[in-house]
Length: 165
Image (cartoon, rainbow, N blue to C red):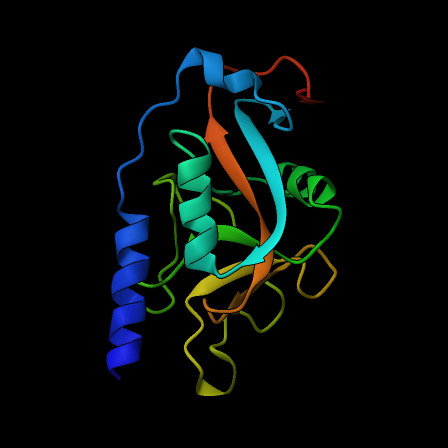
């Protein structure tokens, strides 16, 4: 029970950490990809969801695990991640089955796999990954599992979708 409370506290601390606005010079960082008004970086090192979110926050000011707001954005992120199972910036750590994005953006799109989210076999699954079922859908999962992930930071609008650097 104490472990669950500690895990929940850590998740909440990560989620509510205030990010700084990224400055103009940080946008053209080698390895970042541009899609409309955001920049993305795929990280192939498998980390837990909390570790991945912290990594994104440290990687660039204003960075978080990727929030997804359309099928087109999700397809872009999956292509960038070479269709790996990845963590995305969604969690229901505050209230079961009430999901939110770690970057504070609106919950205006979802693409759950049939039967998800489900807290499989009664196990609390507070974090979300994409491409777990290889059909571009989402799955709730235990936060301590390790997967690659994609970071996202918003910025000046990109005129074209491109790989920067």
